[in-house]
Length: 206
Image 1: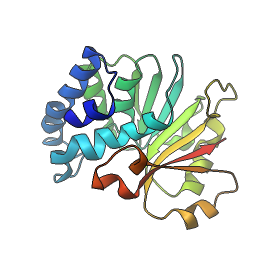
Image 2 (image 1 turned 180 degrees about the horizontal axis):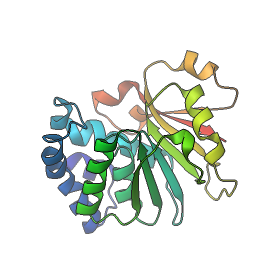
Image 3 (image 1 turned 30 degrees about the vertical axis):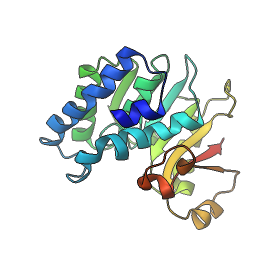
């Protein structure tokens, strides 16, 4: 929790309480359904919650924004972002039903009425969103192919509507496969921990 407070100074008491509850909730559910690796549950706040909030350092979602989280797994980055931006709407999807059931339980426990979790493949979605977020689900080129159809034309942020994708390592070859512009934000510019030295947010306007 101290990590979250250190990097996000303007959180409300309600937001702090929700972030605080996440630790126990994930301990409880992860013991029943393995949504986070066993070794990572001890570094939940750094490697999952703060990592997810790297997107919040790149883009502040305005009220009424619709955001799709593809391959959400245990609810990352969607649930931390939903706490951070309570007036934006989040649709968390994954093809694995047991993971979505955990996400639904955690969203209910945290009273996140701006979260909808659904078992569905991204390719089958028909709704539109201002932004799509995800965390290293696949290579960028096929991912863009999955979600390009779902990006709304209604753009009202400083960044044009598109994808905000959490990735790590050298992305030069992967991004060369894309037939469109992209921009890399280094998370080491925002967070001091060693874990973030190679972590990035890739922004692809669509």
